[in-house]
Amino acid sequence: MTDWYPKRTLGSLLDDAAIRYGDRIALQQDGKSWTFSQWHQEADKVAKGLIALGVKPGNRVAVWMTNRPEWLFLMFAVAKIGACIVPLNTRYRTDDVAYTLAQSRSAILVSVEKSGPIDYRAILADAMPDIGKGNDGALQLETFPELRRIIFLGEKTLPNTSNWEALLSAGSAVSDAELKERADAVDPDDLLLIAYTSGTTGHPKGVMQTHIVIRNIHERAQSLGMTFDDVHLHYLPMFHIYGYSELTVISVLTGAKQILMEAFDADAALDVAERDGVTILHGFEAHWLDFLTAQEKQPRNLKLRFGTLPSGIETTIPIAEKVQDVFGPTISGYGMTEAWAFITCSNLGHSREQRVNSSGYPMNDYEFRIINPETGLDQPTGSAGEILIRGYAVMKGYWDKPEATAEAIDSEGWLHSGDMGLMRADGHLVFQGRYKDMLKVGAENVSPAEMEAYLRDMPEVLDAAIVSYPDPRLTEVPVAFVLPSGNGTIDPNALIERCQGRVASFKIPRHIFVMETFPMTPSGKIRKIELRAVALEQLGDPT
Image (cartoon, rainbow, N blue to C red):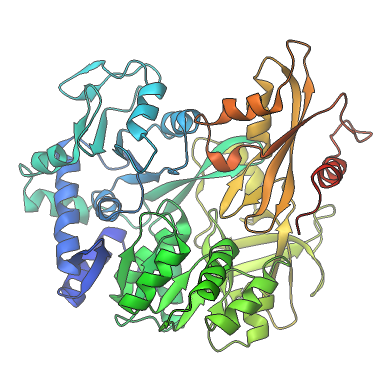
């Protein structure tokens, strides 16, 4: 028996798009554009280059770069030859990138040399003191034994690394027949990407997803009526599944145009949207809050059909309501890297109340349960509990973390999200927040455990606890409480400065308070609810 939805590979999508939409503009950035045929040609050149450098099926190819066409060429090239892409957060710094490169056991890293003030080349040199070891551009690094090649986009490289032009040049020796043989051998059930997401137990975990996620994206594109007449503005980071799924893959499936922005700027984005007839905008509440401010300051004549704005959580609803009045309808949704983006989704036929006050209706063949996290029993309709998910795109597991995988997915295949929510009588899900001790700084997940461990490694710090502090724009930001070790005097500002340049800026505490003891539960756990109250008392409530 065959599946009712034929499985497809990501590489084949661009092949099909080149045939169906060949001369239509697919990508546009800074005055330059690429048709679907040109995108397809560029991706094939990159695919041949990767084959020439020895990338095998199943090898991991890490990509650490800002939004630019080369990211998208790589995305489809890696998939086409049966390798697995590892998107790295561009806000990673030395320790972050070192951990994810080593843990993923990536064979290739492709990185920008520099973007704005951030020198990615210098960060990598700091993480790899033995970068010069190797022969003929093949690295031999003690800390990264499987990392064989680093390729830079830009004029400057590092010892024993190469550049983008050399990658393309190497590919000229690979025939079309060899590329086709590799592409034909790719199984839709093969690993497509490893996406790192912060957890509550310390270091980020690599979520394994296969080509099956295409089905989720394709069905949503159809339910939202997306066509080749749509124009998407792509400022969401490409390393997040939001941008990866809801802009890039959807655009290839529908023939829509993507206008790329290297970084998000609300004023610049709305100027482009007005000039180029953008029909769909995307973003979390922080993006839309900035859009509201920019539009109020300088109104633009826009041609939006709708926007995407995950809503339902209490802090988002007021923003979503105003967006409906200023920009028009938005659709809401809920998702997570472990189950994919927008596994619930509203559509334009749903009422304003449903699109603003809920997190969408379940997509086909996803099952949801709301359980009492203490008893494991199902909650009645309208009652809050932990969200459990089961469906075809639930992750294959966490890369090289079988114990964490077993904790997340039970024996019946239910993914325990750690999120709190409820199911309404109309069948719409409402996401209400996180049971897990996780911060959401803008669009970024921050693991308190990771930064707590980082602070504990500082000689002056005996123990540390990270809690959330409300922020009008980013929803929440991290605040730290530390206990002195007696090994020197603690200077909170010095601790913060020591984190800068070593870890991503969104993880760094905005304030640090020194305490003599932590409030504890009878079982020996830190009472973070009391620490949040202390932060509000000391800093005031900005909301």
